[in-house]
Length: 51
Image (cartoon, rainbow, N blue to C red; front, side, top):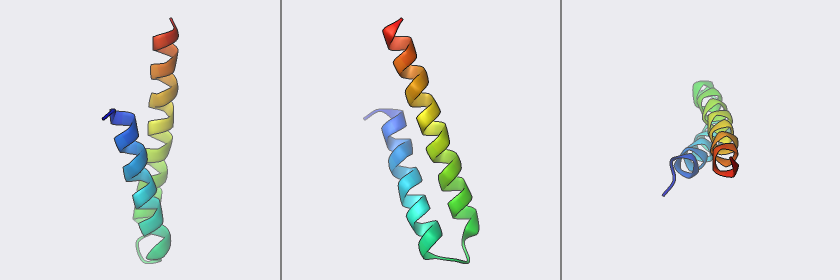
């Protein structure tokens, strides 16, 4: 399994948990950060594969 796919799955789970548990705002921000990081990694890997 690709690293970016694992990061996307973890980010989505953390986003769901962060929204479900209002006291855990930190999870929401970590989930957003992981989602952004995984999207950046996806675009970088696609750019490298085309070159």
